[in-house]
Image 1 (cartoon, rainbow, N blue to C red):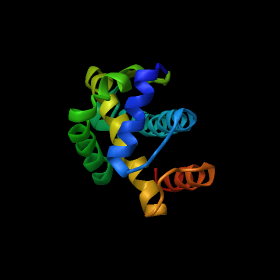
Image 2: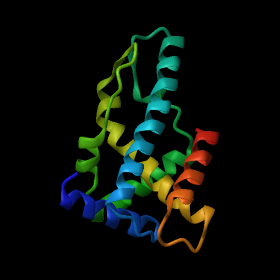
Image 3: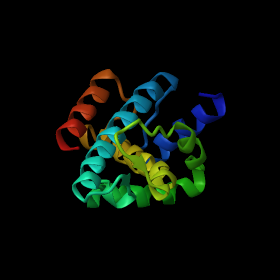
Length: 149
């Protein structure tokens, strides 16, 4: 990831949850969002198949009220940080049995962004005084997401 992008991600975590992350944390972050968005896409494929469609539409994604609120929070934060273009570059559409609809492709960076806000805020729920997440914090947060999503 280019240095400019690293600094934007560091700023994102600072603004979203008052956290200081570094370049090493961004690998964990990237692995996390790819894994969790893949889980959402896998479930959306099941929904599309159930509805006898061969295309995964955006509304097939199991977006909860909480994730939707975090997507909106990301949109507000993104006005100052301008992270969405970077997320577009990170957005990976894993090969599934079905094709992705155009709206799914175009709105997926927002899902990545909402997942990112949820991740940052979860650190503060796990430890309200946390400033610099360490490996145990990342692992605990990942386990919470795996439990719920």
